[in-house]
Length: 325
Image (cartoon, rainbow, N blue to C red):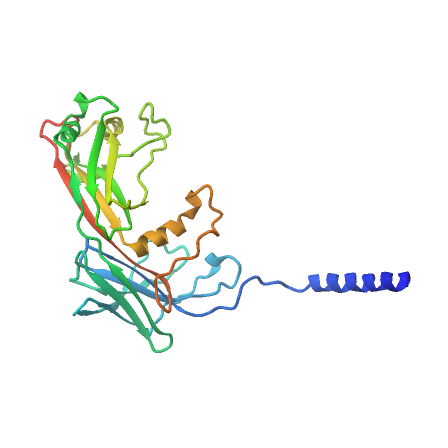
C-alpha cells in the first residue's frame, strides 16, 4: 500500500512540473470599448474631445504599444439644454513624438465657451461601437477677497516680516468638488531691445520652511472642496521676497519691472476631481493603490469627461515697487 501511495505522489509531482512549462498570461480578454477624453473649460473658446478605442499591448509593457487606435467613424456632439454643437475632426502636432510618430487626431468646436452653472453632455456615436456619453456641470464663479492689510504686504514686502501671511479668502462654487490656487508674479524684463513678459509662481513651503529656503519648493495640489465651500489660501512673505530676489539675481544686468501679483483659482467638477484623486493615490502613504476602483464617468465607455473653471484676482503693484529697476 505504501509503495502505491509513493508511486501516486511521484506521478502527481511529474504532472505538476510538466504543467509549469506551460506559458501563463495574466491578461484577461479585451472587452473593446470607446475611450473618450475631454475637459471643458471657461478659459478658452475652443473645446476638444478625443475618441479612441482601448487596446491590448503585444507585450506586458503598455508603452510598447505604438499604433494609432483612434476611432475613425465617430460622430461627436456637445449638448446644452436647447443647443447642440457639432464637433469637427482635425490633426494636432504632438509635443513629444518619442512613442507615437503620427499627429494627434481630435475633435473640436470653436467659438464656444461653456457657461458657468450649466450642464453639458458629450455624446459620441459610432456605427461600429454604438454610443458613449458623459455629463458635466461647470462650477460657478467664486468670490475671492484680499484685505487691505494683505495688499500692503504684496505692495511693500520689504516693510513686512518674513512670517507675515498673505491670505486670500475664497468662497467656492457649491458645484466645485476640488480646487487649487496659484499665486503668480508677472514682470517685464528687457532682453536686448525688446521687453518680454514672464511670470513666476510663489511656493507655499519648502525643504526648510524655518528659513524660507527655495530649495525643493512645494506648490499647492488639487484639494477637495470643504462642505462650507469657504477656504483660506495662505502664503508667506518670506517665500514672496525670496522669489523676487531670485528673479532680480537672474536679471541683475538688465531692466526689470514687476507688474502685478495674481491669484489664479481653478475649480474642478466632480468628474475631474475623482479622476485626479485616483490617479494620484500614490501620494497617500497609507494607500495600496487597490483601495479605490478606476474612475470612469463615461456611460457605455471608458475615459474622462470633466470640467473646470478658471478665475483670478489681480493686484497691481506700485510703480516704485521693491525690486524694480
